[in-house]
Amino acid sequence: MERQKFTADFRYETAAISRGHRLIAGVDEAGRGPLAGPVIAAAVILEPPHIPVGLADSKTLSAAKRAALFAQIIAMAEISVGAASVEEIDTMNILRASHLAMERAVLGLARRPDHLLIDGNLIPAGLRTRAEAIVKGDAKSLSIAAASIVAKVTRDRIMVDLAQQYPGYGWEVNAGYPVPAHLRALLDLGVTAVHRRSFRPVHNILYQDNFVRP
Image (cartoon, rainbow, N blue to C red):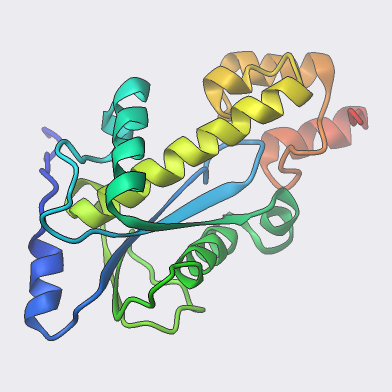
């Protein structure tokens, strides 16, 4: 079956405005799948006509295009970034940690939105603002697409910094995802302080070899 394609637009935001909401924020996260590093979320308030051209799901864009759009979003929109640490991920699980990062991103906005558009099928329990979950929202809503770009670029830059502290794992390229080169490095170099111990590949190595890199 051919995968359905979406084009992000402003219809969800317009619908919320028509229901009486005035300040709409899109919310998305990046980094649920990697074996290392924090999970990052972003909340973005876009207001016409200050919307960068070319917004789309960050996963469909090249790194150069994401970086260019990131700079435009920063200049044109109101944004906030939230994070959940590796320790929080391991303590509460990745889904709850992702939601915690989203909650922190929303709380960090200078103005409190009165409606949120959340990527996915669940609304974080700690939000105190009216919200709707949109499956594949980063491909449907411009506000969520903007949030996905901010979260992705922010996290990728964090992983580049961590790659300098922990060379050999290729995080500047793979962002901590379980690609073959990263998995080989785990076996060769061991588990670092920023690896997620609750994730199976890391957990298995810890219990098999008891090898932790300082």
